[in-house]
Length: 180
Image (cartoon, rainbow, N blue to C red; front, side, top):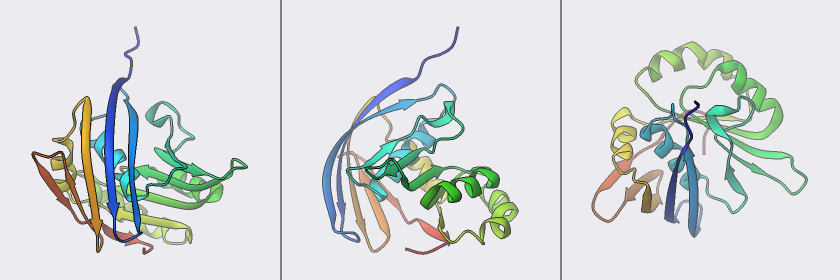
């Protein structure tokens, strides 16, 4: 018998002073049985960093040819493709061919090993940005995971503060490839 996804509800408030984007979103996240709270919360962080009314979650781990998040135009063309973690470089290159912009929000224990292995191969992709999250930041973010969440994301000068009203996580994403 296959395990079913666990459903999480997140009401988030975003104050992104860097982009001038201020909005509230009510999101439903399906956490695949093999997905950790850390990965799910990094997906939620990616949503907050690139929030847009047209940005949506892909089918995730259960579908190989969809990103974690994407934004499509009215014709269905993929404008922005966002993956989290340490995706295979072949998939990243394929995504660069399918989308106008590709963003990888990289995190995890073996991040340095992964990056050293793919850096040269991915450096030629003009539409690609790779952003690193410190291991401690993604671990702390995972502690905010609850089945029903109310979170505030404040983004200023490239720094992110996430709070649930009790605890606050400070995150400073670092660009490994591409810039703002």
